[in-house]
Amino acid sequence: MNYQLNEEEKMLQKTAADFANKSLAAVAVESNEKGEFQDDIYKQLGKLGFLGMTVPEKYGGVDFGNFCLALSIEQISRVCASTAVAISVHNSLTNWVILNFGSAETREKYLPLLASGEVLGAYALTESNAGSDIGAIQTSAVREGDNYILNGSKLFVSTGDKAGVVIVFARTDTENRKRGLSAFVVEPDFPGFSVGKPEKKMGLKASSTVELVFEDCVVPVANLLAEEGKGMLIALSALDGGRIGIASQALGIGQAALDEAVKFARGRVQFGRKIIDFQSTKWKIAEMATKLEASRLLVYNAARLRDSGDISTKHVSMAKLFATRAVNEIVYDSLQIHGGVGYTSEFLIERLFRDARALEIYEGTSEVQKLVISREVIKEYDRILPD
Ligand SMILES: Cc1cc2nc3c(=O)[nH]c(=O)nc-3n(C[C@H](O)[C@H](O)[C@H](O)COP(=O)(O)OP(=O)(O)OC[C@H]3O[C@@H](n4cnc5c(N)ncnc54)[C@H](O)[C@@H]3O)c2cc1C
Image (cartoon, rainbow, N blue to C red):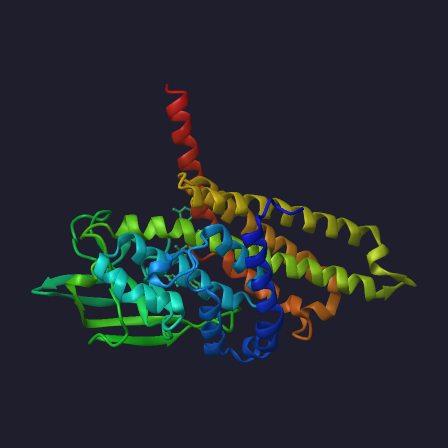
């Protein structure tokens, strides 16, 4: 199926696939084994335009939109999901936030650096007591003259130690849980900014995930995004885009897991027959392929809706919920088809299995997606079928 891609989309998809199959594949195994972040890969991605996918040309981006971003994250994730998560956070949670909520000055200062890949972006929302419940954020931002002074710490910040620009959410009003949050653009060389401990993760080993610490961190007032109190709105609207990225990651990992399963089953012989000829293997392959296809339709639809400007929150959460669950089922079945060797690092499926697990957790757990979907569905019923 061609998913009705136009010529530009096909070309972009091919460019991403070629980059993944050549440049990324050449370093992915080693960097995941050693837990190394590949700075050079991001420089190359910047040159190819993948770090400015939704940034207008006047700020140095390629402005291809969310659908093309989804296509490229899918292709990159087939080969290295760690690289893909950094691309997703950079485009959807950093560039997009600055483009939509930054002042003209902020956009002009940061977007060209980000879109070209000269610096990477990160997004610091989570805290030790504020994960799903972002209303519980305690990092404070107090205005003093021309600056805000930030105090607190953030956990699990992807690319946090590599980024040149970090979107940080902090509390400017201690009374108002929902409207007391604000968002800031923070640079790592601002006084009082430091990188804390790195997480020792189960998977996504080639992506860095760190604590960030703010001790009387001085942030110019000009770096406040939108206005005080808009932090919750900014966080949630950005996550609508970010979740499409994570769901696209699921497509890439799922495709790689299916490819590996078929390749392995064609070669492995037991009881005098290739295991691909056993009905139980064929059923698994059928289920994996069907789940992948359904995921792809949901994810592509959500990305196209976001590009069209339609409110897409429900569709985005449905895509993330379904695709990230499906990919975990797909990697499970693929590993099962591999038998014992699938449980060793000799085979790609072992990494895919570990990487997939994070997708149901970050950028809103599956349970949070269900809260969002049910809220949106019930709102629709309240509108069309009032009591
Ligand atoms: C690899 C990785 C990278 C990450 N990158 C970033 C990043 O770049 N920036 C960032 O800010 N954060 C990042 N995170 C953090 C991530 O977004 C959080 O882990 C996630 O939002 C869940 O929060 P939590 O871990 O505190 O879990 P909790 O919120 O404590 O949830 C624990 C469990 O309780 C469930 N639960 C919680 N509330 C409810 C509810 N109301 N109803 C039903 N069930 C509920 C959850 O679904 C989950 O199963 C990353 C995490 C990982 C693992």
